[in-house]
Image 1 (cartoon, rainbow, N blue to C red):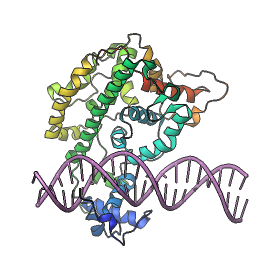
Image 2 (image 1 turned 90 degrees about the horizontal axis):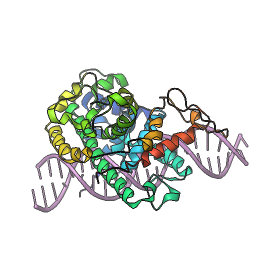
Image 3 (image 1 turned 180 degrees about the horizontal axis):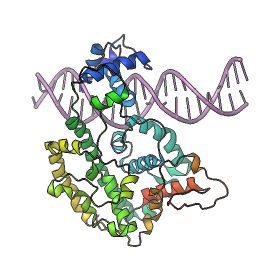
Image 4 (image 1 turned 90 degrees about the vertical axis):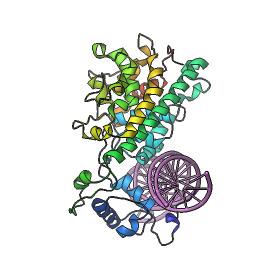
Length: 363
DNA sequence: AAGCCAGACAACCGCGAAGCT
DNA sequence: TAGCTTCGCGGTTGTCTGGCT
């Protein structure tokens, strides 16, 4: 189909953005919103193509971007989602608040992929390279099950990512009349632009749901989820939940869930016909398979994964350096404070990714 | 001090999908 | 319905920086 000619025009500047250009772009979006990206450069007085402006805004200038090192939890989430989704960075980014797809992609390529490779794990399949022939212990049936699970989760995550994008449109129309202020501070922009921080779509967070299933079943006793389908129960009564449908607080924290205390974002979503449509789709496509999931009762397959789940926030690479001493240093918080943390951490990740509900009767 | 190299990250490019007329 | 425009995504490249020799 038609190709945008904007970047092919001669005379347009390429390469790194100058502070002056950033200022112009910020000032324009603050006042008028981005509107049509194609038309923006001319209106904003920039010698750039619209594509370049959009990228600069999305990946760098947007006020709701969290910069700096990825937390251990974020790394874990990226790896888990990558195991399910592959290189669908935008879908992965939808689960990492304030991170851009470009940033995640870069981080994966420069850090995580190499680490997995070093550990002898194929970063594409997330399987040990020595186990090339078979996943799930080499059992073809289990491998097929795992594949089905991955496909299923992939489809659902994609649907959710789409909803997240749509929610941006619903709750934050792109063209916002921003008032008379000419301030270009990030704080100011954060309240005004079309890309204000998104609410977490709590009950549609299928990654959370998936993990909540196994977490709830094996580790939390009385507050356990009754059944995996509970994650979608809100669909039945159309109620926007104020809590996380039976998941314990621990879990919520672990998954970077940021409850929206105001609920205002959800209220706007409630009115969305698109949301209603998606609800119906999810009801039809997701609830049924989940109902029959069963897992080994002893929870052994999930044990290591759960330990990784409980690692404390702020855990960083330096803490993960594995000395030759090899002492086990699991701390009282359930995290790893010992000498061989890196190996344990990554083993946990790998176990989580590999954790196939072998007893599943779903597929 | 200079040159080289590798890592990290910003930015570009090409493609496909969605929307509009 | 076809053709065009616009946007978003993912792969790739370019540039900067810090470490090493």
